[in-house]
Length: 160
Image 1 (cartoon, rainbow, N blue to C red):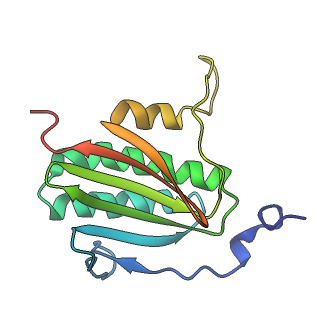
Image 2: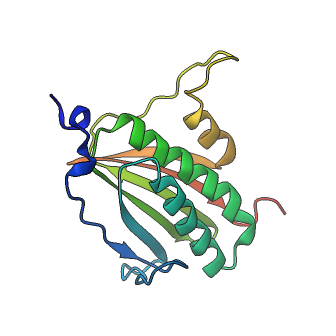
């Protein structure tokens, strides 16, 4: 039986954080560009923590207009990782790759890249990447030696 089928939540996941959220103290990234990140257990409840992390980062950067779309994006990306990766952990990162952009990313150890799919009007699932594409200014995936990073970017001042 595969790890995912056995209920991988019983296996330990080392959770590490950087940045700052309301419910616990974390450190800002030391990479030279502003970012906040947190490693989470790959489970549905992590979408809530991911939304809080993204909203806290947008607040810290004085970008309240991006908090809601960024939270929606991270929720969809975390849900995709939970449903499709089979991994125990995932990492959420929200960063400022440049002065005019906010990037939301979810990294997991699955090598399988996400693929948007056509859905029918009465389908209950399968719209996550379509939502990410509609809400973000651009999105994509990065192959990593040990998995992938799925990201989406929002342009600062997009609604003005």
